[in-house]
Image (tube, rainbow over all chains, first blue to last red; front, side, top):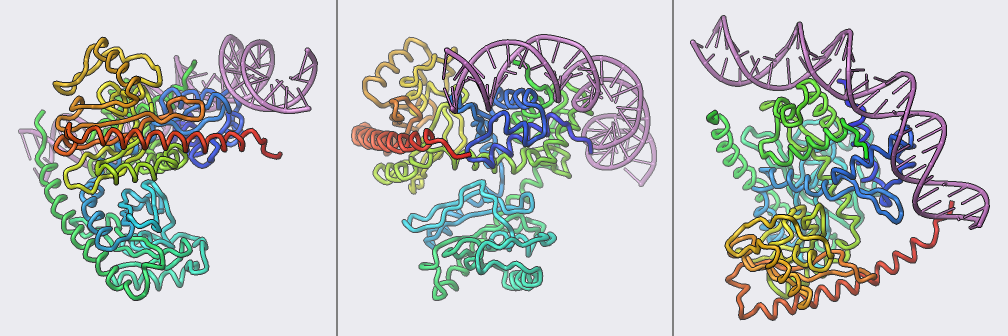
Length: 259
Length: 259
DNA sequence: AATATAGTTGCATTATATGCATCAAATTTG
DNA sequence: CAAATTTGATGCATATAATGCAACTATATT
C-alpha cells in the first residue's frame, strides 16, 4: 500500500501540532519528520493556506487551524448514533445528576463523540474528541468486552486501581459481558467512578457505549445500583431506537436513487 | 508561495468529504480534483492510513475519519478564550435562559467555538464548529464592526430581513459600534433572534464575540433590553478577565525558558 | 550595532507522484 | 444466475513535482 509521501508528511505535521501545546516551529517540524527546513516550510505553508494550520506571527510558531474544527463538526453532526443519542444523554444526565457521555471505537481507543454536562459544580468533564484508553474506562471496557477486539498488548497503569495484567483484564471483561455493563472505579482518574453499557445496532453489533462519570462523593456504593440501573435502561432504549432508525436507513439505501 | 501539490490535494479531499453528506467515492474524488482514478485512490488510501478518512467497505465510499475530531478537540481545549469564557457562557445562559455561544473570526466567517445549551425544549442550537456568515448573525456583525475587516463582497440573502446592500450594512455596523452590541432579528434563521457583544483582549483588540440566541417567542421586544443588558455585562466581564489572564501569559512568555 | 538563529525562496537534481493499462471485485442488467 | 458494466486497486514507465542545498532575508540575542 503505497502512501503519498507529501500528503503523509502534512498529516504527520497536523498530528505533531496537536500534540505540542506550544505548537511547532519550522525547524522543529523539519527535525521531527527528518526533512529539510525548506520542505517543512513549504509543507506548513500549504497547511496554512488551506486553514489546517495557523501561524502566530509573533512567535513564528504554527498551531492547528480552525478548519479542523469545522471538519470535526461536519463529521460529528453526521453520525447517526450521535444524533439519536442526544436526548438519551440528556435524560441520563438528568436522572443521575452526573455527566453523561457516549463513545465509539477509534484507533483502538475510545473516542468521546458527545457529552451532556452535569450542572453540579463538582463534576467530571470529558470533552468531545477526547481519546481515552480502552482498558481503564467504563466506556472502553464495554467496547473491549462486546466488540471482541484483541486486548491491547500493554495495559498502561494510570492509578493504583488500573488493571494492568491481561489475566485480570480477561476476567474483568468476562464479568462485563455477564453483567451487561462496566464500571471504572478510579482506574483512570483518582476520585472518579464511571458506569457504561453497550449500544447495539440492528444486527446486535456494538456500535458504541454510553455511560456516566462522577465523583466518588456522589457515586457511592449506596447508590451505584440505581445509577447502574439508569445506565442500563438508557443503553437498552437507545439500542432499540438505533435498530429502528437503521432499519429505516437500510430501506432508504436499498431503494436506488434515480439518474 | 508554492504549495505542495499532493498535500493540497489531500486537504481538498478532506474539504470535499466534509461537504458531501454521503461521503465520496474514488471516482467522484478523482473527477472533483481533475486527477486520475489511480491517484485519487492512493490519496484517499493515505488519508485513511492516518485516520483522516474512513472507508465504508459496503458502499466503498469515504467519509471523514475520527482523527479530525481528535485534532479539533486538541485545538479547542487550547484556546485561552474558550477556556476562560466557559463559566461566563454558563452564567449567561442561566441569566437569560437562552443558548449562549462564543465565536471567533475564521476564514471570513464566524466560527462557533463553544456553546451552552438552554434547557428549554424550544431552543436554538449552534454546534461547536459551525461556520456562519458574518453579515447576518449577531456574533458576526460584532466581529465586522469591531475587527475592522473589509465587508464581504456579496451579502447573501437568507431571509426577508437579511441586510444585503453594502450601504445598509455600513449603517448597521456604525450602529453596532455606537451601541456596543449587535442584534440579529431573523436575518439568518426565521423565528430566531440573537444578541452579541465583543470580547476584547489586553490591547483592546477584538478577539471574539459572545452572545445568545433564542426564539422570538421569548426574545420579545419587551425583554430585549434586559437580555441586551445581560450580554453586555457578560462581554465586559469576560473582556476584563481576558485582559487579566493574557497579561499573565505575557509575563510568562517573556520570561524565557531555560535551555 | 554585531552576531547568531530561524524562515523563505531559487534552482538543479532525483525521487516521487502521476497517468495509463491491466487486473480484480462488486454491482447492475438481461 | 450469468453476462456486462462500473468501480477500485496495482504495476510500471514517464514526466513532473518535491526535495535538498545554498543563498538570502528577517528576526532574535548578545
